[in-house]
Image 1 (cartoon, rainbow over the protein chains, first blue to last red):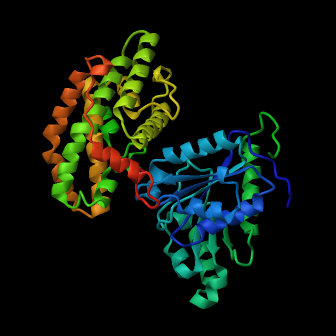
Image 2 (cartoon, each protein chain N blue to C red):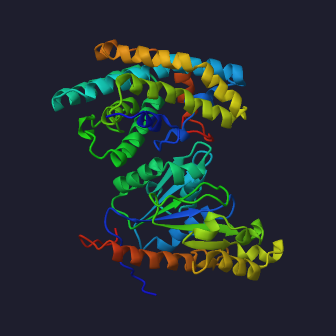
Image 3 (cartoon, helix red, strand yellow):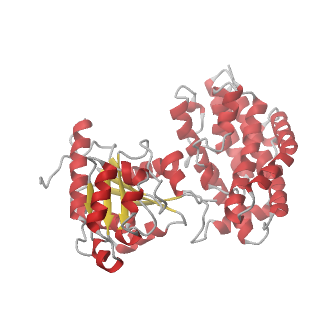
Length: 223
Length: 230
């Protein structure tokens, strides 16, 4: 793996949505990715909470990213509306980040915890990751839904808990393949891998692809 | 040329201009125990229509009037003046910020949907122009009339809060829609009054306000846990 992927065009960061059910570990994954990219990319994070700014506050307290690089969007009981049907507040937040801290390479947009049908609008994000966890039951990949079947990356999180909750990872893998065809699925335990290496590598790959699609008008370097 | 469909499109609660995240002050009123059921929701909605509804509709209608003036300087000057007048009528800083935030959201939608509308006429106020100004400009660009513009504004102040009532209080959605049917005449009347008022100079536009709603809005903005942005 090239440790120095090409950077996205100034002013047009790659936007990656991170969605999934409540408690599946979306915020922990965002924190892990902040650690992974801390010295590598100009990063911003937008959180969408059902209640006020809890997730943004968690990330600020965790100290994994400069608080100026985190923005919270309030979603009026409807986290899926703010990421799919009415994306203006999120686009505003992305713009405000760039205004506050300068050009960004990568913006992670974390959805509020919702259900298996919540997906991001292509008007908001370039790529989306759907996070489910083994404790939610090993039937989740089989149940499908647009998040599981169509997300650019499916992350099956908290694999360290599998023996304790009786989840069969082989079943989850098989069902995910059946639902997703050629789309990738990654198993993750942030307890064992605090920088979510495999997911970070997937994003690096997508960044390189994004940069190839949006050739640099002016060369940019890390801040 | 306007079509009735454009009136419906701009009045639709599903139009992506950020309305879903706002309760129109209802969340704070519910938390304070002032709105608990259909009866108190109806009183809240009637009060909101007579205050924020009338003022917002009058300013949207006045912005529509300004937006169809021939000269850029006249349009721009009138809209800047309206922005300042609406600021003066919005006592709560939290509500001024909300109105500008919603104006920005509508502007973003408008730029994408009607790219040729004369957005340069709007004042470059920090935080964005007030929402009724953007609405007036977009309605003019869509070929709607002044009274249709006022109707969209007045109707929007009702439906946003009514929908929040269904979510916050678990009220029967059919009965909440029946409340809106009962308020339809008042809504039409408010829109007609607002459209007429737009003939007056900006300083004479309606200034109806509800101090309790202003106080609630300021308190609500400090809550650590809330479902709606306002």
